Image (cartoon, rainbow, N blue to C red; front, side, top):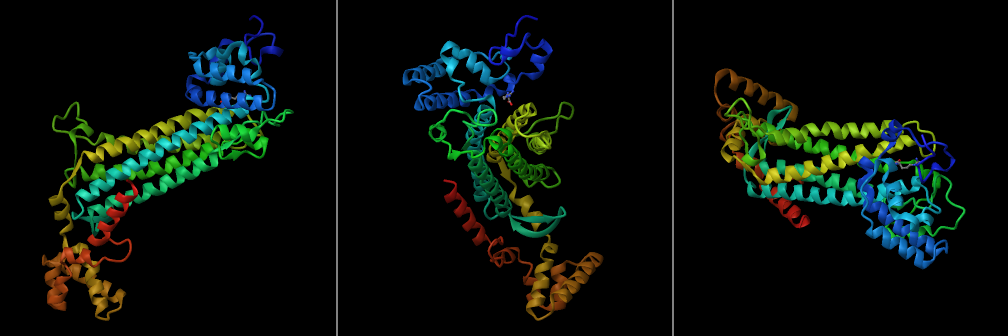
Length: 443
Ligand code: ARG
């Protein structure tokens, strides 16, 4: 091996890294995505150096110009995106790395990247919310059974069920936005670990990059990746929500339920069974949740017990981060598209909801209004349900016989929904108000 070819840190080495080491340590094959943010960070850093007289204004301008015009191809021999950019800059860049380390540089790049990416996730979330609200609006008066334990429980409106996901996604959006707030702080100027002997214009540089402020402890700034963990956790929660929506669609599109029909373009066939139309898109969204959880655990585990401050282990933050961002983004978008091509089968929903047993609780409430304690009423209705099952006589008929004609009226589905007027309950009036609220909010 000849004298080190590593131009950035090769000075103290008699030989360059072995080929196998280069392959093992390189990150440019996946951190190249940070390129635009690395360029932006370097331009801001050059301006900051000019501000304190380390570079002349002309030198800084020349560096910035070159940073904007170079179009390098990623070269794994140069390890990572930072060194690739530096190498592409050529001689004009010799002074650029003053007062800077790759440790504060990579922390800066990831924060900038994350801020941009969260913007994309937020718009994908709103778009999925819009698709859900549109489906709710189109089917505003469709009644369906609500389920607990996957057993028919009580009647609800289809729109109420769809809007439940809109609420979940709204909290996911808040969590993403909150994560962006904490991530949007500039580590630049923290150097490798202990800042710099130069009086860097940290706040000026931060402002140039649109950061809300600067980190206050150089060791914290180069060593923590809690903002990555937070993003992965938020995405995992969002993925968990999507997996439940996906599962509903898988169930509802089955012959057994038949509540929805997913458009052909959003389903796939079987290579063996000609009749099959499978909800693969929903299944994949459900399945991809596994890797969202995995990425979170991977980064938490990578960081656990690391000695302060930067350790090379931390290079392992990027692939899980990018994978999660791509996975959650794609899942949100495909779900929105699929819902725009999904039709609700009113008659199947309503047939399932027409089972009078779904209103057994309403009959108990009816007895409560007559002064019977709820526990006692619950018991009495339970006995009536058992008698109905045993004797093959419908519950409304038995109720009328036992408690008078008024009791049978309880089983009118429309009335049963209309009286569910408390905040958050699915009366048609409430649900229409919620559709209107979300439509306005998501405009
Ligand atoms: N590629 C590295 C990473 O992603 C950049 C920082 C390298 N710093 C170092 N001291 N080797 O973590």
